[in-house]
Length: 346
Image 1 (cartoon, one colour):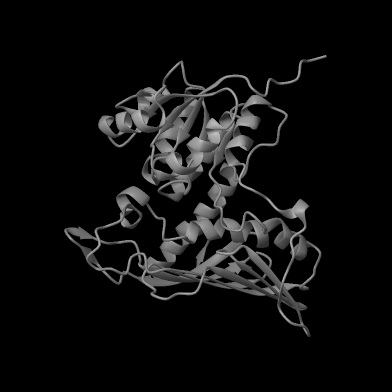
Image 2 (cartoon, one colour):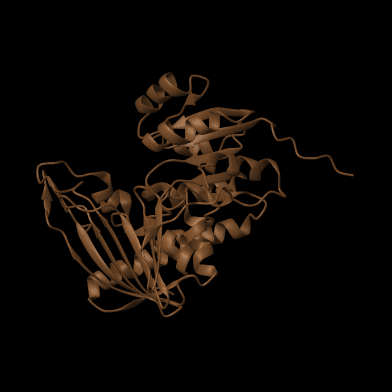
């Protein structure tokens, strides 16, 4: 009889890119787990890596080159917190060095890079790979999936989602890295985040038609190429049609929200309050109470570490397959913006 896996076995983590989400979310949650050691850190510069280690991980060694964090016999897991431009190279190298990989969202700078990451993960099935999931819809998403699976609103035929903010409305604000295509790649606002959520709840998106534009084309000395807003008509493989609106230049916008309209009623999710509302065809739209067994809290770091320690444990989600699927949609939206035609997401 084999011995059960040691759930507190020491694991050494090398961090590539130590930004806000690593400091504020991942690191505190990792530190709450037994046997976790932050071994090495590379950041935008050696100075910033030193500062991170001094303030947050004094046991870790700051390293100038991210490659030296990855190709390191004292590292078991590569935790990638860098922006999308580095995700492919760091992931591919880490897998080739025999390291488990946790990669920050969004998956990659391009569809081609995402697909190569997915292919690399298939070559190393013994290594755990995962993408950071969005918190959007995580808490009560299981209830949405159950209501849809049970046919509570009948056959869904139409959906509406808006994710609008004024984050980019100030013309005097400097270029944010998410507006810089050399760093963020083809990502646009929260398009990739909500594509991941929608495909989990409603199935694959088959084709898109998109329109959008850059409202503030120049920020200081930088020319902006990533749209300030985009509207997407999405056709799902199921036949459902969705209208999706994203903006960074919308003052006084409502909260991020999804409506799903079906033959027997309507289901909504408010991504700010995590409220789920249900209304049958001839009744009112009412906020639902959530059964405790359908509430999901943030356990992302614990789930990943468990999968590394125990090969029999569930692999964490989203995996690289799911990431590739939403990257194909993001790529199709970019192609549609360029061609003004409907583009396939296959």
